[in-house]
Image 1: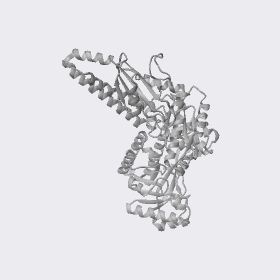
Image 2: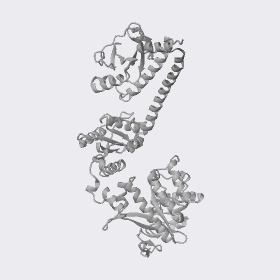
Image 3: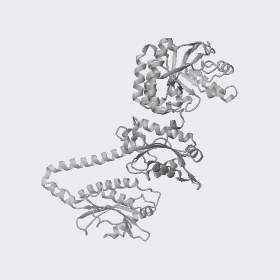
Image 4: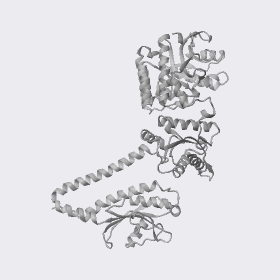
Amino acid sequence: MIKITSSEFKTLKIHETKHNALSISHLLRTYIDPTKNILQILKNNESLQKKLNNILASFINDENRYVYIIYQDNYHNYRYLADGSLNPEDRGFFGQKFFPLQEEKWHRAFKSNKPTIFTQNKINNLWITMLYPLNIFKGVKSFLVIDLSTSAYKNIKNVLYQLRNFLKYLLYFFIGIFILLILLYAFLYTEYRRTFVDALTGVYNRNYLKHIEKIIDLSQYTLAMIDLDNFKAINDNYGHTIGDEAIKKVAKNIAANIRQDDILIRYGGDEFLLFAKKGRDMKNFYNRIYDIINNTIITIPDATQLKTGCSMGVNLLPDRDNTIIEAIKKADIKLYHAKKLGKNRVEYRDQADKNKKILEFDKINHLIHQRNVILYFQPIINMKTKKIEKYEALARLYDGKHIYYPNQFLGTIFQTNTYREFSKIIIQQAFEIIKNYQISISVNFNKSDFIDDAYYDSIKEIIEENQKYRELFILELLENEELKVDDEKILKRIKYFQNLGCKIALDDFGSGYSNFNYLLILEPDIVKIDGSLISQIQQSPNAKKIVQSIIYFTKYMGIETIAEFIENEDIFNIVKNLGIDYGQGYFIGKPCQKLQREPFKIFECIDTNAA
């Protein structure tokens, strides 16, 4: 006959109860600001009282008969802070006095501030009481109390005695499953937090956006892009610790003023994305969020108080967009125009409604699907031979009357299906020119393009199909995004095209994110020296020194160089004498819809439409 002692079963239940106590403690942290006095908060906040009671109530079952939180006031009286009792008549209300039966054990527990467990002998149907210290309430000593009932212990013991030796193995099995469930719960909870929750603010991160991308019903939501104004100045003047504190406080204040169904995501460093459920005056809601952020105060160590400010772009009808990415892009464009109009404002209207120079998404989409995409070509010459050996392809849109430049449409469609289609057309047209004229063509790419699987697959297919002409195709990576050594996916895909025979060019080197370590990471075939350096090379000795250092390093690495912004003959001669391999600029030739035959003779062109 198998025997299980009271102490053995008691130990098992204590472990389980400790786990429940830890779980409750974690949940409480999500609702409580540890920097504020919990008693003052709860005193005037019945809603929060109910939330805490509900959290405790969710852990009550046949075994956990009572779950409540007791604190000690300034007069050493014990009082209820929260009570999860399911029966309202049994539930202690906030601030109500509590009179423990085994008072000495309670005194010892509060004095030591350590977990305390003792057996109940004077209360029917209660077996064990566990006191677990909660160190999450500022200035308040409190304990989470869980009273275990005797019913589970008696039932299990009777069953174990009846099943004898067979239950020995069954017991081991259930204990193993129980431990595995604890480990699984801990793992899933940790993994969930790591994957979907921003470590600094506690709100969702961008991974969560990908998680909900296919399942969120945009017809139920509006969305806003929120960006803190002049946040860089806070970081620069007061340090990243104060900057992080500002981010955390803003996130906390937003989260405290939105509904449970709303979704707040930390989208970037100082950017937030807010999905707010419809069914209220949405403009009034977003204006209120705007006011809350603008009235958030950060106190720095010298007692100076800083106020945060923000700009917002709001998309009130995201369900009219094809994808969540397009809906976010519209909000982002409105945020951009809020910034452009002086910051510290909420922008609801499309800039296209106010400024016809920027195209609406629908018009851009129509022009691209009608393939009204044209390429202009700017010549790049060999500085030694003065012969044109390459062209940079520059895309435009045309509606039959007007030509539109990238700054009028590209930001609106970036990272959408329309953007992918636009890029495919450019690459196809570039290969047509390469086939017809056997000349190198450079096409611009963002580094983030290579993260997008659909985008990558579409351009990969075109490049692989043009096996004979790949060596004349140049992927020119724009210098508007940082590339890190751990961006393995991007680097692998760029290297794949390089291994196919395509050339990789790094644009605007010497500005933005670029540095010499960048060349070691990317290993490009061509470096285009930033035009701001070349344009100053006559007047600025420092600009000239930077250019010379770039030339020295690239020659050592076996990388070709191109000087951009060669605007006059003097710059041309300086660039040539420095030993730069290629040149590009208006002095050599302006972008033209035809291929320029000779440098410095802009009107002698070959009509690409005649081929």
